[in-house]
Image 1 (tube, rainbow, N blue to C red):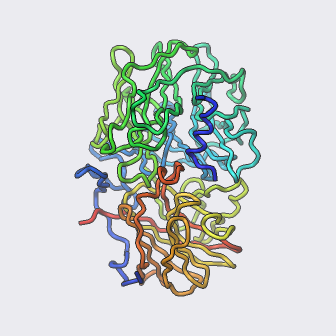
Image 2: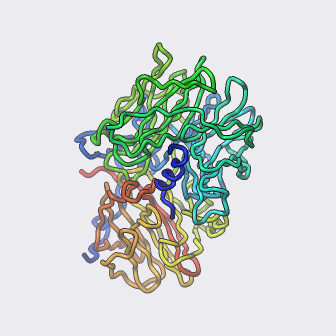
Image 3: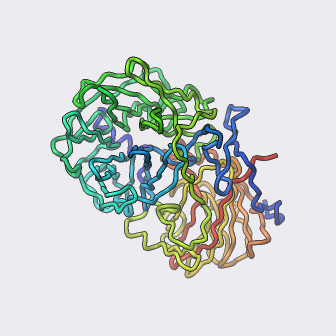
Length: 554
């Protein structure tokens, strides 16, 4: 499968020339949660702890008028935020997830509740999008990247749009704008009243009044700010233009420096102009945000949307990697800014290691439970298929408190794989697995089809996976067609357990250290996340999926 990093490079090229032991608590019984969650990072001896929410998950709202980043823990990259009166809506790059583009709703920029997916059947790998409202309709502009599973697409990168009367839908089918080889659309209305999309590499196109077609050619509109050549970055990679108007100025916020790679690479830069046609001047104190070293708590900070918060204070919403936990992917961060007398703005959140004053506004219930009794279909909201053709949603059937996955392929590399995002540094997952037909099924921590670990059964034996392949150390579990499985990930140390009855648990003889299961290893901008899989012929039935954040060690 085409890697995300390779995709970016190609898209930008034309634009910028032992045995089991014990049972019970000692062998992995779910642990009670405490009131705070701390994720000690590399190079840091102390860090404030997060309050706990649903299932002990860490959350940003401290409950005392302050918040501690991230506002969305887990792999929620490239945030696009729309202010709509007192409401805020946000979505993220969904890559190879189907359904895609989960919409989140907030009234205070800190607490977010999921609404549902806007994209029922992705046409390709979904890169960074932009949400817009024009008149009384809502729009999401989407780059679909050609993937092995996608239907025919005109070019390697393709810009489409979907629209709806409400952010809760119903959303239209994707409409092809006929724009190829560009990514990261950013919508804006000019002083001339016309609608425009800006793209990576300084490109722009004018849209028709309804926003559903182009009204002119793609043209070069701006030159992104360039940092000094001796700075340690991944690549220049100007991308992610987000535009807004304040007073007499249009502001264009860019990401430069590469999306992953060195901690100091990704950054936020800004330019402004009095006309949407330019000329654009770069901010004299660029970059607005950048990690200064690998000792910082948040790495590769970039791809920002600037938004006015409740009460008139302004903020940036962007993503970053958590020091020591790159396995969690790029998490959503919120940083206050201040406007200066000369009409520019500065970031005021420091390194984001300490609590900050909340924006104000109404706090909605935050987050969602990861546990699932499969009483209702959670596809697109909680679970998503990995790298699946639009028709593959039929492979997932939920009924009678069970989830049946129709099998395909021969291993997790090409199986039906169902994943969900998590954002805790320590957690336990558990599920009841039953085989129907000549199948293999089980429980994984899954990065992509090349890198995963976990357990599968085929009725004759357990197959243990590490490093994206069957491991040399196979566990002598009893042959069975139904097995309870548990995985704990305690600050990068992963342990497997299994049980015939869900009561007496046996610890797998091998533990794994998974810090390297990240984007810089795989050249793929994803995260390590819980997954269910079904391979072979027939189906695998899953029941009683359980998730629990684990407390800090004593």
